[in-house]
Length: 184
Image (cartoon, rainbow, N blue to C red; front, side):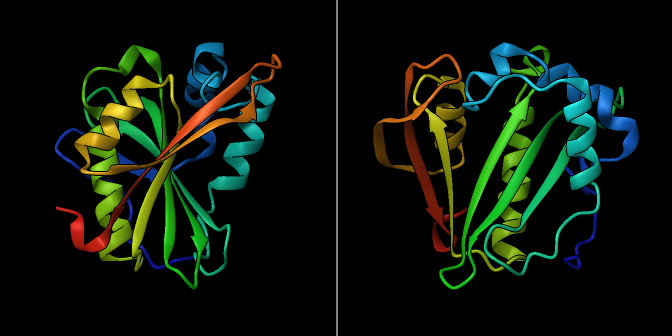
């Protein structure tokens, strides 16, 4: 497990590892079709959410390609988990890290994803040694496009018909990225 001081706190949020008590909160957003449509997979069942929480609650070693850190996004007032933010170590040698986020639709539009993403990007650059942070997102996910741009990321690629949704239709993705020396 990486030596991180968790939880991370921002003005309005606590970012921490998931625990067994978070299954219902995760299912509340991961079980929704409108959330899953941007993830190129079906909505998760409650049992699948329980399995995911069990797997990710221990954190990560952050040593090998593919290691990931998944943090619950929890409002400091109210206490419920409103989403999650993920860092995935794509390449140890090239110090490339992918960032992603999922938020319950009821909590969109409040700046929570931006606040969490900024804190986790700072973690990636300042404490995890990331050189380049990137995000892959469905081109129809305009909220995530705006979030990437608020973080100062640039659009580096537009991948056309590069993945298939569960219903069989093609989806296209944007790749946004920012380097450590560009991050503010």
